[in-house]
Image (cartoon, rainbow, N blue to C red):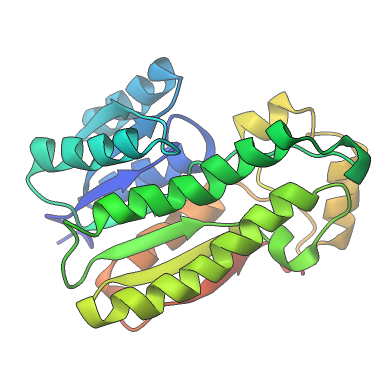
Length: 248
C-alpha cells in the first residue's frame, strides 16, 4: 500500500516549482490533492492533468491565501471534493530582494501577507478539519539561517515561518497534529529561472558555498514532504529540515 493511501492533501502555490513537485509526489503515494493557485490556472490544470494521467486524483482550486475568505474557501473545497483533510502544505510564497534603502511598505506587506499571514490563515482554516495524525508542512528557506544581505524582508518572513512552526507544533501537538518545516536552499524552478538566477553570479556564489556543489532540484525537496506527511514521521513535530546541500 502507498504511504498516503486514503489521505487528502492541500498544497498551496502548487501551479509550478516546488509546490507542483510536492503535489505530484503526494499523489504518487496515494493522496488526493488539491492544487491551489493564485493566478496560473493553466499551470495548476497541467499539474492536475499529470496526476490524473498517472492514475491519481486531484483538483485545481484558485485562491489568494493572504485573504481569509480565500483560505477558508480552499479548505472547504478540499472537503467538498474529497470528504476530509489530512495534510496541509503551506508552500505559497513570494520574494523580492533589495537594499535597506529600497525597502517600501508595499515590498514589506506583500511578502509578509503571503509568506506569513497566508500560512496562518490557511492553517487556521485547516485545523477545523485536521484530526489526530494530521500533518502541516511549512515551506521555509535556508535564508532564515544564513541571513544573506539585501534580503531583509524575505529573510524575516522565513524566520517568522520557522518560529510559527515551533509555536504551532506545541499548540497543536495535544490534538495529534504535527507541524514541521522544510528549509530549502536555492532550488532551480520556473521562478528562479525567470528571475535570471540560473547562470548568474549569485548562483555561482551559492554553489561555491554549498558542500554538495550544486543548486537543488524540485526532486530533492518533494520526497521530504512525502516523508513528513506520512506515518514514517509520526514522532516528528516542530522540526525544521534544512535541505540545502549542506549550505548553512
